[in-house]
Length: 179
Image 1 (tube, one colour):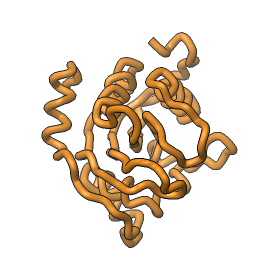
Image 2 (cartoon, one colour; image 1 turned 60 degrees about the vertical axis):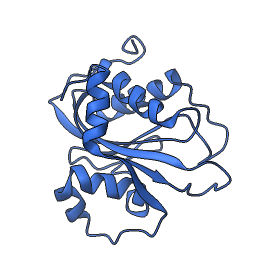
Image 3 (cartoon, rainbow, N blue to C red; image 1 turned 45 degrees about the vertical axis):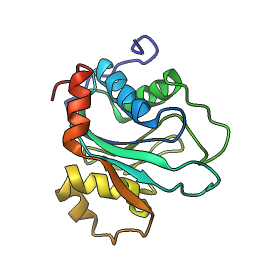
């Protein structure tokens, strides 16, 4: 378990939205493993989007990504949630060698309650949220009210639905995660 490395700060349950992406190894398994690992750390997964295939952004000489958004509740502070996300990435084999480069798993906090934070290590809402269809489309799927409040046009990016939300939930249930 990761808890030994992350100091827990008890807070009220806060709703958080996380964006997950993977394009190395078995991306589908990486996404599912990340969700299960986060749940084991006490992050209560409440909803998952479908999984979308998207072209890379920034550094484009890499494979396409599988992306999704997870709605969750947590007692972690925003900073502690970030630490748990980063520890989960490390546990699953993330290597940070090329900015916006290929990765086994990427977990970003998109929203944490109605918090607005601007620190070097954490900015909420996520600063590039409105530029990324691979975040906005799955967010709209599981939190249409939040998406509507953003009032942003959908960025033009190569994106298609690969695995339906109901299929993702079924796979996670087979792995022991109950919604």
